[in-house]
Amino acid sequence: MKTDGRKQGAESSSGTARMLTVSEACQLLHVHSNTLRRWSGLGIIKAYRIGGIGSHRRYRQEDVVALLVEYTKRGRANGHE
Image 1 (cartoon, rainbow, N blue to C red):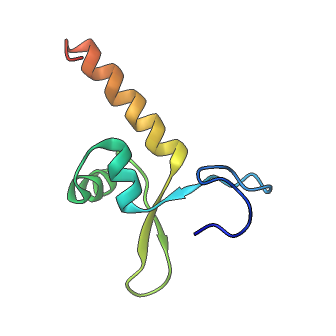
Image 2: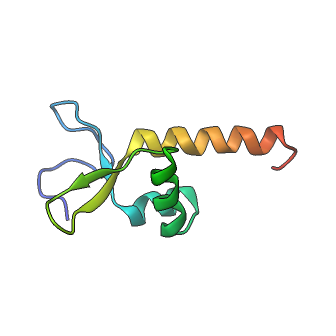
């Protein structure tokens, strides 16, 4: 729950990008979490580790949106709508 008055998805006053959880990124991309983790390992999208041992992955919202746009364009170029 946000307590700082910002809308979810908005940038902070310092200009830092919104970071998405694995689940949030997967919902936007319509992929399974294993697919997103594999794409991170392949360098298709950068994952940021938050925390120490047992750290959690986060993805920049702008990176997820850019990937979504890229794959949407590719799908249309290949005849998929």
